[in-house]
Structure formats: C-alpha cells, structure tokens
Length: 526
Ligand code: NDP
Image 1 (cartoon, helix red, strand yellow):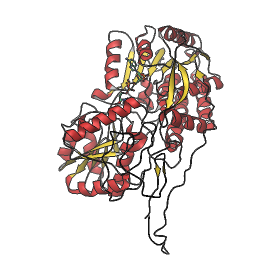
Image 2 (cartoon, rainbow, N blue to C red):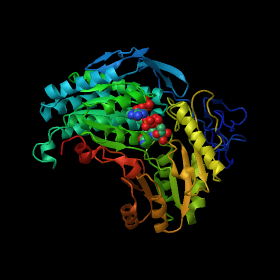
Image 3 (cartoon, rainbow, N blue to C red):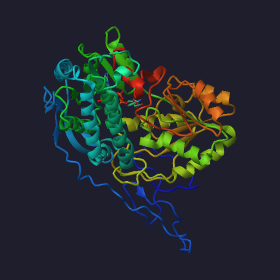
Image 4 (cartoon, rainbow, N blue to C red):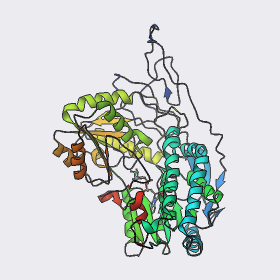
C-alpha cells in the first residue's frame, strides 16, 4: 500500500486490482508499494527528498514443514477420516494450496466423542488438579518454544500479518494455557463450592479469524476444569489446530483428552448434535449460533455462544485525537477487521468529526497492505473468497444506500483475496453497513452531539459484545460504561485481551463468558 496523503483516495473494490497505482518508477510488487516521504526533488540537509521506503522484511517459512496430507487427531493419534475424504486448505494471500486435510464425518465424530468420554471417565476426570496443571504448563511452554513455527503457519493458513500472529495470537494462546494451569488445582477455592465438578465431554466449534487463539480459549479452561474435548476448527484454517494437537502429543497428554476433528459445517453440526457431548462451546456467526441453540434445546447439554458484533467506538470532543485515531485503526483494521469485537462503528462527536476523520485518513495512508509474512505488513489477506465477496457486497450496499466511501490509494496484489482499508462517512443508522457485521476492514462513521445520543446510537444494534470510549474525563467513562449494553467496554484503548478478563456478549452476541473465573464456570457443574 502506498502512502496517500491528500490524494483523495480511491473507490476500489469490485476488482482484486484496485485503482490506486504506485507512482511512476516505484516498485509495486505484491502490494508493497513505497512508504512515506516525498518522491521527487532535491535532497536537503534534513533528508527531505529522500524516499524512506521500507525494504521487504519477509519472515522465512522454512521453520514450517507442511505435510501433503493431515489426518484427524483422534485418541492421541493422527488417523484418516473413516470416509477417506480430504479437503484442501489454501494460503489466502496467494491461493496456493498448502495441504489436504481429512474431513471428519459422523463416524469420526462418534469415535472422537467415545475417546473423549473414556479419557474423561478413566483418566482426566479422576486426575488431581495439580497433575492436570502440569500438562497445561507443558503445553504453554511448548507453545512458547515453537512460537515462530506457529506464527508462520498461522499467517500462511489464515492470511493475517506475521507481526500479529507473532505478537498477539501465539503469545496470548500460551498465556491462556499458563493462566488456566494456575486454576486447575485451586477450583475448590474459587467460590464454586467445596468440590466443583467438571461437566464431561466438551464439543467445541471455532471460527477462522483466530484459529490458534480460539482453540486455546476453548481447550485451556475446559481441561483445567477436568473436562475432555473434541475440537472442530474452521474449514479454511485447520493447520494450527493440528499443530496444537501435535503439541498435546509432545506434552504427553493422555490419549482422548483432546481430539481435533477437521471438516466443514457438517462436521460441526454432527459434533454439537452428538448425544454423548455434555457441553457445547461455539464461536462464530450469529446465524450458526442460532442453529446450534435450536439443536441443543431440550437436551441436558450446557451451551455457551460467542457470536457476532457491531461495536461502537465512541470518541468525545475532549479525547486526545492522536491516541483516539490509533485506537480506531486498531479497533477496525487489526486482523483485517475479522474480529467479532471490532470497533466497526465509529461514533464521533460532531464538533470534532472532521478533524478526527482527516487525521484518520492520514493515518490510513501509512498502513502497509501485502505479504502477510513481511514483518512490516499491517494489513494481510482476507481469509477466503467467500468472505471477500461478503465484504464487497456490503461495501457496495453502503455506497448504494448513500454513504460516502473512501480508501487510501493502494495497490492490491494480483493473486489472493484482498480488500483495502475502507472508511464510510455520512452513514445513517438504517444503512446495512451500520447494522450488519461486515467482518472486514471497513469502518462506518456516524456522529453524535450529546452523550445521551451517543448511548442511544451505540446501543441501537441487535448485538452487544464490545464498545470503546475515548474521552479525557474518567467520570464520563464510568457514566457511559454503565449505559452501554456490551460485554466489554474499553476505555481509551481497544482490542485488549487478557486471559484473566472475562469476554462475552449480550443479545445476538451470545451468552456465557470466556476467560477469568467466569469462563471457568462455563466448564464446571456449578
Ligand atoms: P460460521 O459461523 O459458519 O463458522 C464458525 C464455525 O462453525 C466453523 O468451524 C464452521 O465450520 C462451523 N459451522 C458451520 N455451520 C455449522 C453448523 N450448522 N453447526 C455447527 N458448526 C457449524 O462462520 P463463517 O465462517 O461462515 O463466517 C460467516 C460470517 O460469520 C462472517 O462473515 C462473519 O460475519 C461471521 N463470523 C463471526 C465470527 C465471530 O467471532 N463473531 C467468527 C467467524 C465468522 P466451517 O467453517 O468449516 O464451515
């Protein structure tokens, strides 16, 4: 992506190749167009006139050894699917096939649940918490030791930038295992009664936006509490879950305690419907969450759902603009906006709206889009063609409904799935882009005049997962946080995660919490 200060932007995005072009004579390979600095003229003693471009800084992919085919992780071993079926997983940045992965069917689900049940009854359930903790600590440490391998593999399979997988996904996944290892022998003292019991076999279905991290969010608390697990990763991102299964083997985890079934929606549906699953935990779309709720209704299964969001990031006129703009960028462009708690609706006080959006445009002009393995990359690839189509469709609807669309000039790579960072101004609350989860790098800007109006607009959504507030006044933060219907409210920051902090939503964002003591409760019979 090139810097586009004052260039007015472009209105991509129907085609993979955006309108923006690199200035003549400047290299524009793979989306890596020159960075900041003037492009012509004499060099002054202060360095003006020099092109301060980033050199490519690709992380080597040598550390990852990809097998041509992967089996299911069932009862401690990698085995083919009963049907012998395989599906391909591709690198979304290049469309290059990475590997073929076993597709689990009903028979495999049955075998995995039986293995998990036997491990629960014979080994993991009866095991003292202090012993369970040792395995969790081991998994956490191995994750740290193999962190580069995980980071590169996640970037390859998901398309997210290496600096995010390296600095966010992998360290946070390890932190979840460390944190929950600490709980395993202290459950009797956690306020759940004198002898809290695990629930049994957990069927866990996760999405593609944080494949390793969501696996850690699901497995770590379940295992700490004494449950055994059957995990179903998303079809487009199975590889780090399978590497995590290898780590479980390496840590000597008893067979059957963790099982990983790769497959598509049908595999997930068979898992949640299985009669011997005691607890279902799902993260993904609200639509599938509702289906699962219907499946589980009337059964004794316990259920937690972490679903979509349309969070408001509220900026008051007394907020420090630079910090707020960083928070806005982090809120919606982190992980290509594939974030359930993304700050996808910017609510900015009318008196500062022009100043904030002008500064935001400048900042977007400095973001670098391209090769996810390049350490300078800020915005990677969209995870799949299907998701790219959805982002395009909703962005086109935003334009058709009358909002004004803007993206910085940028060159998109020829191959792969790409979408430029996009800002819509003049958005009204009835527009689809203000109501529906786009799950991409698209920000909708709305304005407000009074704090009361900010609350009304922020809460005008069927979701209720997260929100952000930017202001100089502590009292205003507390006032607003009490009135926002959101599971998490970040104040003068955004997208902060900690395993000790419960995360989850209201309304169509689901129910139940993950993380902290509240998250443990979801895996205990309390
Ligand atoms: P889904 O909700 O379909 O996928 C989440 C997980 O559920 C995947 O593992 C999926 O399998 C599985 N699954 C699909 N159908 C069923 C079913 N009937 N029963 C059980 N499990 C099932 O999300 P998509 O990937 O289709 O994304 C669609 C939209 O959902 C996105 O555009 C985004 O708006 C939203 N989304 C929200 C997320 C969030 O965290 N809030 C996460 C992901 C998506 P598989 O992928 O293999 O088909």
